[in-house]
Image (tube, rainbow, N blue to C red; front, side, top):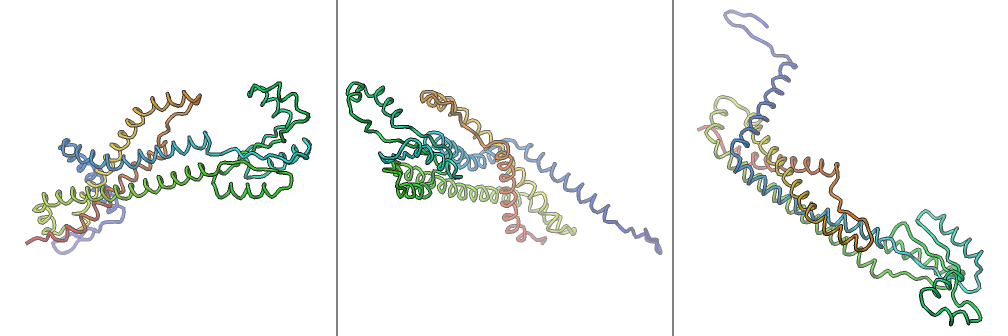
Length: 319
């Protein structure tokens, strides 16, 4: 503090300015929240509109992830059957199975001898007497292989390599249904991404229009603040917090809409899974996914506010 002739000049330190800046942010943050809670119906309608826009791609994304999980458990990793040549002995077949199992791109292998295959076929077919009368076992040794990566291109390379092996007579795998499944999943993923982008833009448009109306309602107040020397950052701050609360409230609404949808779908899905002797259950976003939802909703709200404020605030000047 410095004294002069009839005047006192005070120098504000960096710490004092930081405290004042933080205090003002806290007041603005809480006052904008109180403002929204003071008009619950209008705020709820905005939160519901944002929540529906956010929840639609989220529901599709969760369904897609569960379908991918089902495909992985129920056949996403197909079993490739290697029929060995008739002259291949059981010892050589077992050695080949162990060699295949050592590959990093193979999850599981199972060697089935021709004797075991014939016994299984006799038991299930009902032609035991006929098969017993045969001079020799017509069935070859078989190796069942479960690849680690069900991608059709990678699987095709494996099949081509095994078909070139002189010990293998034939390779059986149905790639067509797998290719169709992967094509459908890729299409669904891109559809969800496109829908998320479109609805994300819709959220920002909703925020922009809401903030524009709030700016127009406070036009005279903004003119007075600018007239007494208020900066654009000072005027902009309440609207940014307004966008933050709208975005966060919309994300929370989307979370409850998603959980409600999963609740109504979980029972019939579990009943369907039990009919297939499976214990599958619908999975949600998880803890990290829910945090990203809240963060993403808040960011979309702030971005929408920034765009609206940057466009409309410059048009308001004290006359």
